[in-house]
Image (tube, rainbow over all chains, first blue to last red; front, side, top):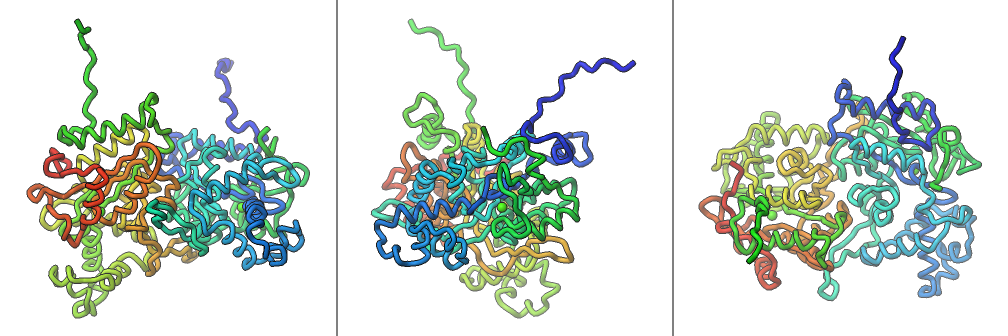
Length: 314
Length: 314
Ligand SMILES: [Ca+2]
Ligand SMILES: [Ca+2]
């Protein structure tokens, strides 16, 4: 008769994930790359994991959260800009005219971003981001935006770190917008946040060295830009990649192209009740071409509705 | 009568530094920011140290070592470029004509750099760098270039890391030129190397994702660029900065401008016997304006001849 098994089952490090195919794939992947006996063992310096941010680590509806920051800033700056009352794209924001806001293309968005993100020093910008985080609330969920991060993903990042992974954000969002809070919220140090950026310039202002943010794009960390951002900031090919949209497809392909065991994990927003449900036709976080490719290549697809016990931290 | 002191003196963590003012300043600084009782205690995430590379962590004479890589590459590529035999700037290299080589300005250097650093994938470039390191030798010292790093600086970086500093390179040299060996030689992970870069592009080559290096400058990490590179890659102001030339002055000023205790440490090349002696008039590693400012502001200046017991690792 078999010997009684007295061993305690290991504590579940992903308690907010329902048992099933996806959770098992995660555990199997980590075992396969960290067990020294495994033929697919990976040395610690190569245990690089990258995560998209919007829609992967926190929500992104009804607008990318960085746009709520833009709206907050424009309203804060409005008293000094009386002309904005009649001038687009500012008027739509001051009138809370979401319908018009949603029609804005790249030109209007760029004008809004440059107005709120440039012309100030790095320190002033960071203070503005923290002011927004402390004082603004999500319009329908009525919570601070940093409470709208995904609990299962926090657990996943911790689990990877416990297994000596170095975890990076690689996001289309602003690098300097994410850094002030990524460490506290995600446990990701500032130098492990990769994102889009504007040109910054060193100046002596009254003899004091400052970094002034210029109204000029420096780097767009999206689509083909994501593998470039990874090369520039990390310098190693990841073995784990998490994302949720077509904008992550190139970094998934890049991750997938390495030798040995890799994991590509896509979040599918399927939960209209607890979060939002959207994919192929969404303006934000479109998941169309990548949904086909992920399915075809057998990448992991998280069904938010069935794979996650909870969405946000309690 | 005093109680006998039975405590063992702590092991000297900077054995290659002679006792004296500079060594004491280093110990005092680290104590002041790491002792929890100290009024100038610094939390671990803010313990950021940045080091220039050429002339600070390894030698840079008679040419920046990256130029020896360029020379090596040009000679390796020459059989496929018979036209180079008569064409400058290539001819000077193929003829070992150092006199002409030293007259080259930015235009010629850029052409040489783009010829050897671009038009290939990230992987091909890394292989080229490692091929050079394994097979080339310094012309007068007859050693592999990675043996020409400064033993006292290796100890200093280890000492800082032992005290929970995160150590970064912030160099005018190529980021992708340094990364393949910085981890093994300096213990600095790839993502903690900041440097100059060329534009890189994501492409699918026969269906395989690759990063192709383009013949276009992306970022010059020198002078005013150094604080910008720090902001872009690190996102925190350093509290320790090591350098050796006027090109480091802005990142020294930037480091110095923070609140609390900071340390700015300049290497002064004073040892013509064991290394090289040069400062105000040198074409490479000019230390002129910064020598005045460092003296005036009381920054630490390492006198290589008297402060260092040895230069290179045994
Ligand atoms: Ca996304
Ligand atoms: Ca230097």
